[in-house]
Length: 388
Image 1: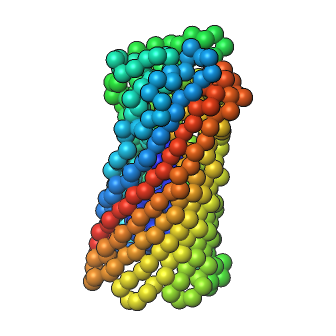
Image 2 (image 1 turned 90 degrees about the vertical axis):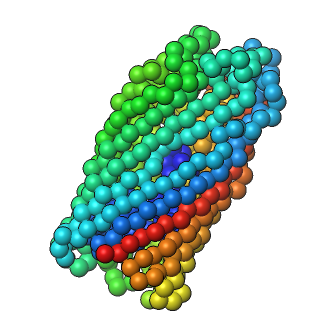
Image 3 (image 1 turned 180 degrees about the horizontal axis):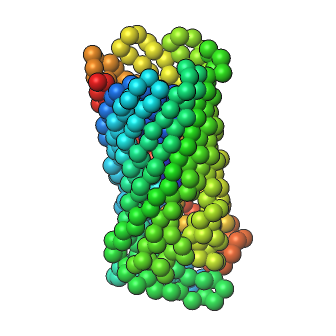
């Protein structure tokens, strides 16, 4: 996850373009960003598999605080390498109707520090000392789309989600100074949820196509083993997206998308640290990508993705375990077609971003004044697509 708790993209085609392409029916996993694309694709199946690396560093500070644990000084998270995979199948029933099944990641995060964030003077002797977190989500979308004419299509997707969580985090209220112990530190808990997605695509002119998509909040069960850690279920936030593409030439398409992420509806994400949440803001994400057909077999892509950090500077200390602060993503990729097969590659890198808690926020901020986080990522994916 690099746009807050959401991935910037799914699959090599979209990931090569910075996540842009709400209008482009590139491959079966494109249905995960807009199910209306299902009726614009032929019969095909794809598997995307890759890896990404995160370099996350921190230094906890706390002037005269008995709360922030400054032991260990500057540290690097031991959770740094992650798998990234998705797959999908698209099937056209007739000229107007299509079906799709896709599996894809969403949400997630991981850090593993040598020393506790809190409990001044604490080390690594116990599991309950506020050192790590791992949160993963796996999504299945079953979708369909209908094209009433050659210039428009409309789609619906039903989403089923499985998430798992383990953490040694502790939960506290700064208004009392009391910390509520994590009753199940380091134990894996599982929750299930569901949501939906609707979208549309319209060809306005021969050179211009526009699209819109609404992805509902995915309503999750509570992590029952961590009710002392999370004040609500940890849901995937709702998103609203619009996009357009401009066909600069028969070989070149430029795509521009915008997405709004509604973190404010989820108590665990939006409530301030003093009230038991992460204190995350809503996000506004811009995606710009270009796709160029070099010859009959080879397409190349490049893109840029920007999403504001959902974590304010005065909530840096509170988010040491979940440092989703990266903003700019630069991407590239390509696909090569051989008869019924297409082989794809994409990669991305983020500039290093650092932010420091000024100590001007709530009690967590005051006690963690001058705590800083630094985060940088890079990764790649490979894909095989089969057209049948």
